[in-house]
Length: 562
Image (cartoon, rainbow, N blue to C red):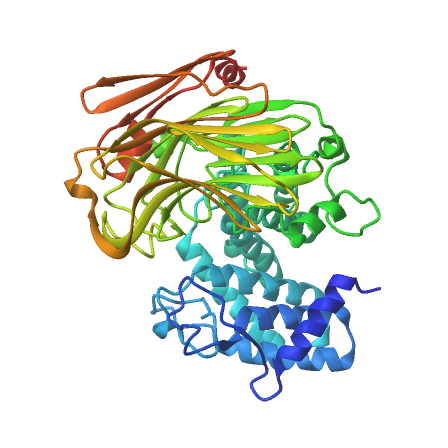
């Protein structure tokens, strides 16, 4: 019997399908890679959603569905670049409306995404399709595999490293191409060695991408005929499920931070469905190992830290710390850019049966600003953190929107964004000096700027409440007109904050000292001293990551050497 999700997806795409173009027409929502804009192209004929529609039709079965799927696939395979002499060899554009040459940096991930669907179609549904189309699909899979091999993504790019391993491994098996199959097997083994070397995925604790990684690994486990690859996938599945399970916070039914990448602060319906189905033995889908089920219900205190990078490769380490109890969860990194897909400091609170999220942001004109570099250290539900400004980074994206520390803006500010189920919650907040205190049910949040050292002048505090959000802001600069910012001209621009979450948890008492061009902020906690050392002036992103020093409290240091 087809699942409700399958039928719903097919019904949605049925409404969007164009019989003449043989593709699905969708609103333009992509913000990366495409040069098209919603103002001129509000709707587009999207290739990958059309591919997914064809796959779903074949999964549902029936002659009429197979015929429509064949028509869609016939169009899609013709849009792949199959010329080995071109830089875009083996990949697809996003849209029928825009060629690869017209795109703003074509997306090489499309070889992996389209390639996976085509491999599965060959493996499961080739008998439903015309022989000529099957030959075309086999050729498209070959070219996609060649693109994946040429690109040769490393194991640090978790979901694409795994998806590409599946396409080449299982694609090579189907094509009878030992060179391609062997590459896929070795790529998966390399990913396993890299991941076990760190102890976790480098695309760490991502609510949107960790389920995708599990789906890729499950696909290898279910579909590959290579015994060694199947065993490697099984071991990686265990690592992935353990990472997810220990971050789940039963009190708020949320996914604790910090997040390496996400598109939403709170869990989406897709993520909730993924976890819910994985915990149901009769769901018929991907299953979470039973030994991890207790994590999803136990409200016992959890407190741990772990490395998230191969320090020998990066030249530095980034630790992720998470604390949970029966009221709240709090997670933080020791370093990271403040771009919109990252959550360097993230908390969730059960405020009388309603959940409140707490997200740290650094904003330029209301948008997350990735030229702000976070450094932090956490002891249970206390955090000491700072911001530096990078002179070689971007505005909203570190690759696609480079500004190199020079830009025009009206507003620059640091924000604690409180969201979630705020309807009916009072959330009283007050300002005392450079400290802001907010009451979230019976849980107290406190934050204080303990160092405000900037050529832009002193921070201005602001508290703003709407129906859906509470903003606790430290304003660096604001005005009605744009002004020029040039980080290269600044002698000093560093801000250090103390943060605590919990009624019986005071703000850490912070001691500041300066040596040369750096400042050290330290605090004594119940677990020993913790500290951060950061420059006072703007600089290069890599220098911040490699040079900013963090001292973890003793309890966490002991965890790392056990």
